[in-house]
Image (cartoon, rainbow, N blue to C red; front, side, top):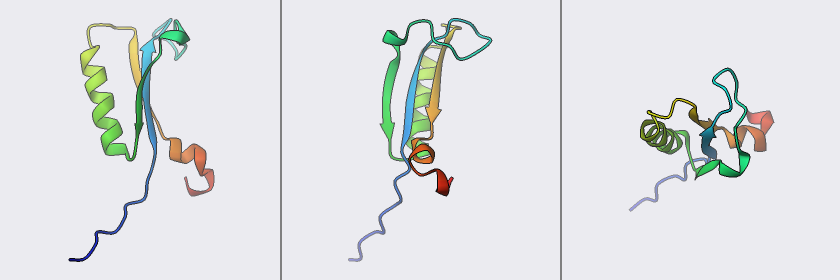
Length: 78
C-alpha cells in the first residue's frame, strides 16, 4: 500500500471577541479574546470560524477572524 503524500502545512489562527465599535477592529477587552485555535489548513480554520460566528450571531459586536499564519511565517511564499 502506497503512503499518501504529506500535504503542505498552512497554519491558520482563528480568534475573536467583542469589538469596541462596528467601525473598526479594535477589541473592547484584549484579556477576553477567544483564541479558538491554530489549524493546519484553511478548510478546518474556516469550519471553526463559521461555527463560532454562527454561535455568536446574536451578539452584534462580536467578530471572529481567520489569520493566515503561514503568510506571516514565510512572506516570500505568499
